[in-house]
Amino acid sequence: MKNFKNIDEIFELQNEFFNSQVTKNIDFRIKQLDTLKTAIEEYEIRIIEAINMDFDKCEFEAYETEVGIILSEIKHVRNKIKKWASPQKVKTPLTNPGAKTYIYKQPYGVCLIMSPWNYPFYLCISPLIGAIIGGNCAIIKPSELSLNTSKVIKEMIEKYFDKKYIAVIEGEIEENKYLLSKNFDYIFFTGSPAVGKIVMESASRNLTPCTLELGGKSPCIVDKNCDLDLSAKKIVWGKILNGGQTCIAPDYIIAHKDIKNHLIESIKKYIVSFYGEDPMKSKDYASVINERHFNRILNLINHEKVVYGGKNDKNTLKIEPTILDNINLDDDVMKDEIFGPLIPVLEFQTIEDIVKIVDANKNPLALYLFTKDKIFEEDILNRISFGGGCVNDTIMHISNHNAPFGGIGNSGIGSYHGKRSFDAFTHEKTVLKASLIDIPFKYPPYTKKGLDL
Ligand code: NAD
Image (cartoon, rainbow, N blue to C red; front, side, top):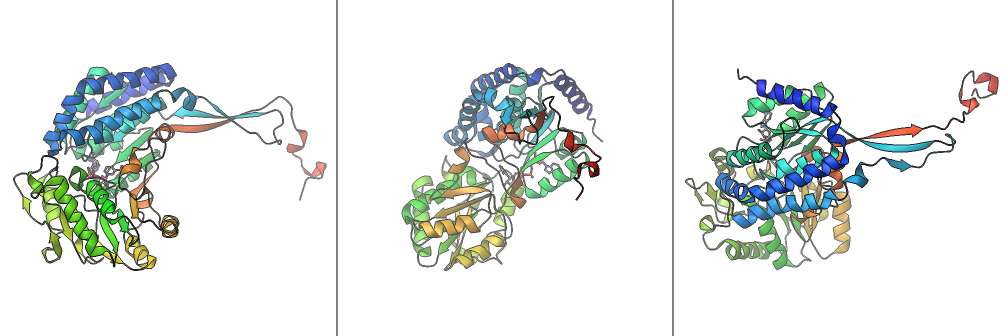
């Protein structure tokens, strides 16, 4: 049995520090955000190198999807903290004459942030921004599968922050389990639905509020009335980004029967155009994180249905972008989130066909729709439940700091980004400030006042 004394010590220190009230001060929060920005700028090259070592991700993609997006989020929230953190006055009904009502934004306290490996920097630091602007302390537990990035995050945080305020705990699942046994004030978890259930069960023991950012099978619907070439281009980019290991990657395609073959040809064209004739040799093509996931993905390939790709290289943990045609709900590739570079293609003729396919993996994290038909677009958007998504694009909804990002049901509970990160890491405390004018008729005995019904 491991010794978790360091976790106990940090947990106690953070509770003490939170109780000192220092983290609630708005200027303190702004200063910490500035410190975080300075830290990231100093460590930028090391972070990108570490991500590259973890899964051979190219420099530009690592900057674009992990570092650049964080710096832009810090800039977005920095000047808004004062407004967000101030008590907000709301209307008060006449039943309370002279009273005023305010919503106070109360930090939760000591927060746990648990992250997956697929965007190992972004998914630790983006929730941390929420914890800081909300006025909390935080313990971050990065994934044990992205060790190089985890090491750099720990070094960076320890150089710039006191562990009584922000700390990083590295380690295995045992550390996660021990952390989950502590009575945190709030838990922010990003990962799989299976582990999300474990986290929620642990949180329920102390009735700890939690946000769960999970995964799922995100459909990509391609209508016959669309810009087919542009659709294929955007699908290939969104799917193959990070080697297909993106929570909001289009998981599978549902194409209209009339254009399916044409779409497949266009997808092949863009794979070659982006990654060359041998994508596994492309510097822009990320590898699979480890052998376990490599074998898991390979097991999903039914070679009789491969119309493009299918090869792999165990030494580099790369699997070719692989298109699988004539797929139906009984295929293995349709049973669970793929999280790899496989592109299964199913077909539809009516909206009922689409609903039936999506319902087999209900409440996906994302949904993508390629169409020029506004009626079809509204029908899909109103009818199908999903976390968020795009019309005529993939992935990009995540880049808008003004809108919430999160799942529903199996793909998550709660949301964050920008103002929603502030909301996620604070409790809204309603306070009615009464006037000294009293209303006599509200007090018993009611019968004497003729108020009995
Ligand atoms: P995971 O659920 O296996 O691991 C996530 C975290 O949980 C890691 O820190 C890991 O150490 C910890 N963990 C694993 N098993 C645990 C256990 N038994 N008890 C306690 N903690 C445990 O997920 P992953 O493989 O790292 O990441 C992939 C999943 O994350 C996919 O489902 C993907 O869709 C999802 N994801 C979601 C988002 C989002 O924003 N919604 C973002 C990225 C990834």
